[in-house]
Image (cartoon, rainbow, N blue to C red):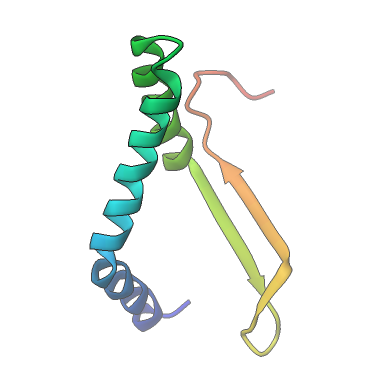
Length: 87
């Protein structure tokens, strides 16, 4: 991927930051409200864990020869943040 493509994606993200931030705050609020009836501390724990999962996940979508997205070639990768050793 060329540098201009990367820069375009960064600019697109920054231009939509208010919307992305609002959705993230709403998700956090929903998590806290759903967990509150069980335990106040559980909501905090689930909220932090959700952030860790999203932060350690990378989604990829393959493209065809023309550069169009191939919706059947979607993969997810997760970074090991649990301290477990790989074999």
